[in-house]
Length: 85
Image (cartoon, rainbow, N blue to C red):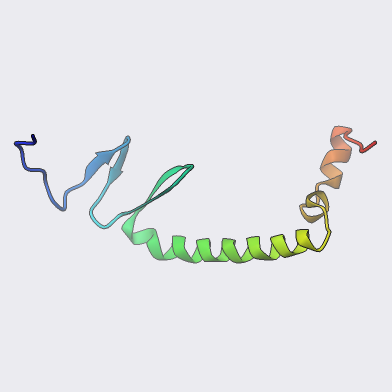
């Protein structure tokens, strides 16, 4: 039984990260992320932009282009001496 009241609207240390009131904590199977309150709008804009780019990439991959071509990795593979046999 908990016998001590906690603090409300005070910063806390959460997993080694200082979290302030109003910060956003998001998580999935890969882990958690803390977004500072004043950065939420910018992070949301960047997230939406990335989702849109991933949709375009997915459509290109569905059309038959290889991920190597899409990501322009042919020069990297060539430099590393990787060749398809």
